[in-house]
Length: 275
Image (cartoon, rainbow, N blue to C red):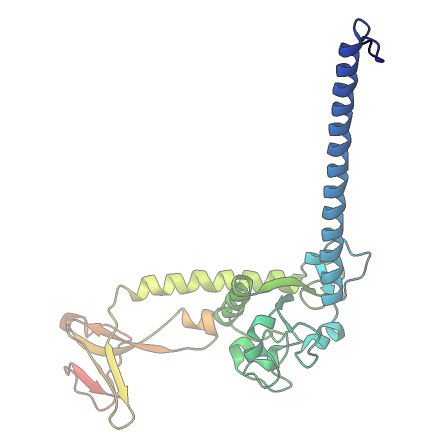
């Protein structure tokens, strides 16, 4: 019985295979392009979401080049003082602004450090004055050692919290560049660190007295080897602007040296003195 189908012509099978192969390659190429476009779209959407999230959180102007370079004005920073639940809690120190929201129990309303929120109160970090006049960014009149402590506090916030921008004013200009006041504060802090190191080196040459104090018995100083004497700390004036003294132990053959002060009410060769 004859078949209705005609036999394939020479080369027809090969042509069909070639067409199938070509279609497969084109399909893979199209799939690859589609996947690439999908991935690019996902990346763009994620980037847009992150950018909008940061802008809505810190109210960044669309024209500003980078969230990390956000510049705050004094009245703008004041909005982030923890009274608005919809905003993060920010504080400034030496013009650097940090997000301290994760420490809300401390920096939020009712927290022990709430007075630092929404402002730059650099001075209060060392003065302990949390009144209106004390909550200021001015370091005028502070010693090198005190300014060094403020700079160290700034370092603490860099390590512990998120740096989100700069405060335009005393320490940064309207372009985000450090002012002479910031450079001066950092120079004084460096000087303070050098003096403290030098003072420690000098004081290590003379062992300090042992001491103890209790509310019932008061204070007492003593030396395991030598005799307790009060001596001035000459570098203290440069560090703190004030003269202070410390207790050091001296051998018997050193007791005639100038500048040594016997504790009031203590015998010349006593090894223990009440203070």
